[in-house]
Length: 251
Ligand SMILES: C[S@@+](CC[C@H](N)C(=O)[O-])C[C@H]1O[C@@H](n2cnc3c(N)ncnc32)[C@H](O)[C@@H]1O
Image (cartoon, rainbow, N blue to C red; front, side, top):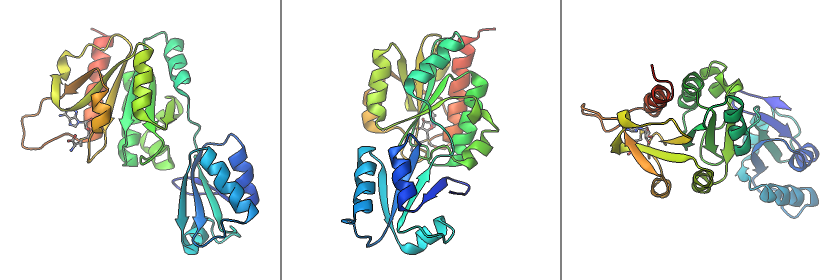
């Protein structure tokens, strides 16, 4: 196994098949361009990857040489997460353990690992009981995220889900009030977050996806009087989390 700042890598066909059959948290499968997909071991890798809904990325040999540090990768490398993700049930259990109503933070495709790390750091400080991120197109829990979180990543459970819209609807079924955030909505200073709540922060460029917005209970806005259109995602997340903190912990 090789590690770098972002991930750990499993190299070669046999180790990759074993990892795909196991319970390891996998980020992505890398296959070499032009690899014979009808070879038995490659066929097996593709089948297992599809069963797990993993992203399969076809890349030039040079990329695999780099990822594997020129080891004999046989055209196959797996990137695995150095951190263990929680399940949504575990986020609820974490809230119950702390004897507080669930306070979840949902991140709709945060791409910058520094933003994610700093959001997790504030989440820990503000009493968030679980963070939810999507499996695809977003940064996962990398070493950069861990460093920027200043260790908070070890204390706050993070769940990774395939479909945020389904997750939001499941949370609502379980009695959680889900709040979206953007520049149009109710003033966040009136937000009462005493009960079971989840707040969504959107992607740095695109904000919250339109479909997700349609599924929230209410949209919240942080008023802005300057010239800029929006706040940085991590700054907005901090203000919202502390509004929730204030209403959950009155003076
Ligand atoms: C950089 S902003 C995204 C801007 C994006 N162009 C948009 O139109 O939503 C990233 C995220 O930060 C949060 N955010 C930024 N400014 C905000 C504000 N004034 N009120 C509420 N949320 C805000 C939202 O969650 C937003 O999706």
